Image 1 (tube, helix red, strand yellow):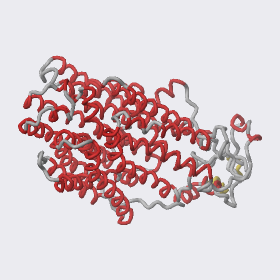
Image 2 (cartoon, one colour):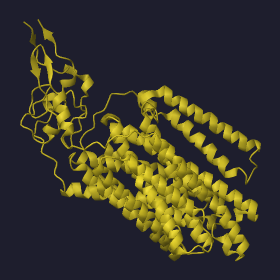
Image 3 (cartoon, helix red, strand yellow):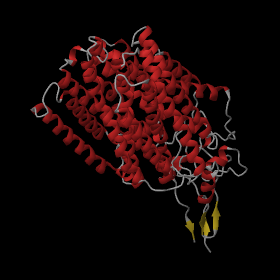
Image 4 (cartoon, helix red, strand yellow):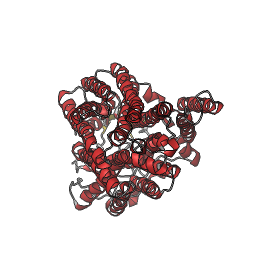
Length: 599
């Protein structure tokens, strides 16, 4: 008759076991002093990032006036969005494998450095460099805030606590245009950056003092494996290719003709490096910046195309509508910011409504179709703007375009959760975010190229000597004003085209219901998977949730200690709960031996 020897860990894994903490793990308590202060610090960080996103477009016309850089509007957007796009997947890997506390602090330092460079710069090129630094930091701040909230709160409370992030983004988006316009008129565009400087500093100090996180399970990787994990070659090829594309879009038709050898060479280099980037993604598997395994899923591919178009039209509207208000309507920056509230408020309200309704109805695809309709109508009407267009019309057009954008801006995250298994959610979301920021960077640059080329050809204006507001202010000639409006209408037409093209992605979405977020789902799954039978003898494990919540049955699967031993997590719980403040490395599931069967 067969018997089963009790499962034991490898001796090498258990040599420090006697020092393992056996204190019962208390349930996490919300709204303690440290948790509340940590949540405040994270929301301050998110507020600063959201403010940086929305406050800058209002100040762009004045920035171009000071630097005489109307042809660089595309770079002001791309310099921020491209690093955010390129480094988003890598921050996900950092948070998953290393200290989330020090990762988000590093991101805040990078973000703060970018703000300082932009605030004190003396040239357009230095300003662009500062925007790039800020973009690198912003990628880690947003992802880190959501991740830290998720691991600090019980699963059933996470959506409610994370909703505070959405509220903060909404408030920042509404306040930013008015605040930015007032600062530009009252002081200088640099005050838009000076105002943000204290935020990351305060948030960083608060997180340094009060943020306490459990240890992170780490795999044992060599130096080369660590480097390979972040796909440095693929990232470099991607950045080089996008840089060549943006440089070609800035020069083509203005500094050099489209058939000039330099422009052709830039496009060739872009094509070569981008093709190499795609090839590397196929070769590197799950270490790729964009894992092909994830991108090959039908809904994920459709979402990536849709969000590329949606965020592209959104970025064009956000950067060129202030040019219309200040350059054509001759408004002050404050007035332009107030007029932009219609767009932002409609977007935020639609975003909230879509989230609530999709959760209650259990379907998200109808909202994508509705989004395309409102975006197309709104952007179509924006292309009819004229210098004498009354306020009621351009406000109504903005409401339609903003509502269409908001209806589907956050739904891709819901769709990803509906079609991917839980272990692939982080990678799937990072992939969608990659294409979101990529669309904003590329299409703002493309829209700016069309705008400045049309303006240069039709009005004969030297763009290197003018800013967005000085062209019409220098002369009240109605003819020149109309020519300026004709040129500005082209990037708005690009927004219309992108709105219409986004329907292609919607058509290919899978019609799946929104998964219910049962707070006990993970615990139930772990309990079902925890029963392993060896020759009739049943071995039981405790799910990480039950051990973390003070379950009656919390014995360690590896050594029978109570409560669950931090050195011996149960086999189905690779990411088992680890007590606060414990710095020991958790043993991963694959390090366990199977039970030996003795005859």
